[in-house]
Length: 505
Image (tube, rainbow, N blue to C red; front, side, top):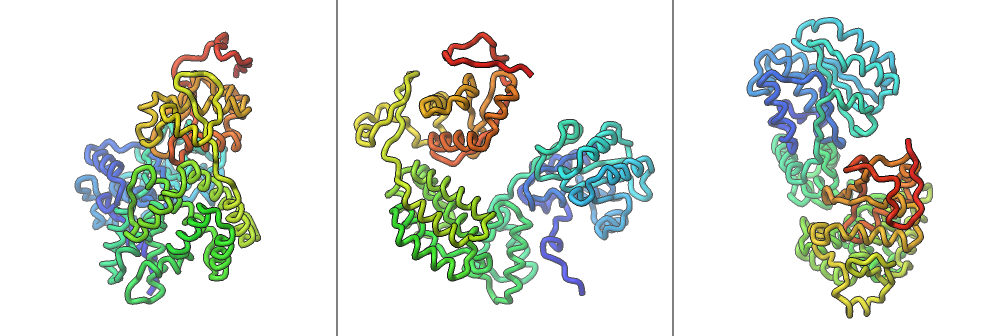
């Protein structure tokens, strides 16, 4: 008997079985009920979030002979044929390997013919961002004026790579990362139906490792089943994916915070000798330091046992937020370098040692309220004596509202005083807005010139901005640029007393 992978065996067959995407499934069901199904959809989201499953369900629902409340019955001839993959009217194509103009031209020729059995001819194109420019142009002609009997469902993890002409002709649905709670609920159902005994801590760890991708979580669970154990424990998961124990992670972090090079070398050698996955280990340390930072900011923690929380509390008292952020940046850089290195062990040890040798900041930039003067460096003792001028960053969420965006003025002043004049000049007149707990949007008054785009998009410049913003807000943040906001910048406006060249497109 042919073995079926768990993620395929437990693929959702109805919208109601999908977890964490109710904002999408409810809309699709309503469209089917009222008969207003669009001719083209774009399903966007990370891997394993349900894009392909939703596409298959939608294809069945619009062709089902006995639909109920927008759901396919999965019992009629059409549904059974689609589930078996034998219905010619539903075509699934992987654009990663079928991305040429000829592949799309074949579709253009087929759409002129009526469906053989079903009501609609449905084309599901996965990884659509992989299509060539010529293929996109060919597809566009079909999307502009599609026959009434044709539906397109495009799926991608990178919508930014799609031409605007394609995006504008599709109903876009963004699939979220699935929460750990929803992943755990789904895994419990799978374990119950397959008679798998697993402890709660193991389920929590699988959910964390999957990073919001349910398919990845099911794959990890399936690997554990292959071990043939009566009960799957948390330690089994850690050994399977090569994650060192909490004690190792805590000890490394403690030595990093205490700048103990000898202790770091000893632990690093133990991890290497045990054959642990170095890449995983680094990211576990980064996540642990992030949790320490979160604890300092909010005083709360999840998933950790009481004893582990005590260790985190002890470490949090030994280090400042900015120093934790710097550690995260240093280790993230190390993790990035490890990916392409053929000497991971050497780079791993030297990278950790380098982090312990790096001095913690003994100075901090302080800005006087409502002043355009160049910021000065002040010792920590002076800061304690002048608490009234120290920016209050304890409440990360309310920082922007409380300071009226003054943190952005601080950053611009820092860029100016540290010699980042090119970057500073191109950010004059901009505003910043925290759109969620991970991204700050930088808004421009008018279009960005080609030259400015080149400067702003340079990786080193984005890194500088992201680091300054993260330090100001007390959490790791990324940036995105948004032009054409508000009125156009006046060419004669040079109130900042800095020579500005306006480059028209």
